[in-house]
Image (cartoon, rainbow, N blue to C red; front, side, top):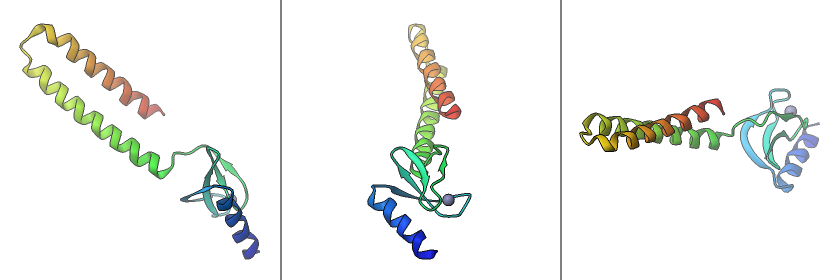
Amino acid sequence: MKEKKLSKITGMLLAGGKMLGMHCTTCMGPLFEYQGKIVCAVCGEKTKPAKTETEVTQLKKVKEALHAKLDSLAEQLAKETDQTKTPELLENIKSTLEVLKKLDEG
Ligand SMILES: [Zn+2]
């Protein structure tokens, strides 16, 4: 049983699967990213395309950058005395907020 499990894991690696460092909720087997899907090497259960740890980390970085950008835009907006530049700043803030909202939804 244990050997069979191991051969399945090896098979997944040979097929080009990427081990994700996460475990299957059904059998606790290692989860792989294979052909864009999250697959359990042992029971073969395809889980919902969950975000990988790398994606979560990247997403967090992007969000942090966007929040920093918002801060800086808000500061500029507060200091801006040239009224002609205000719409541009507001547009920037708006689009940044839209991206953040999309990231939260996805
Ligand atoms: Zn499994």
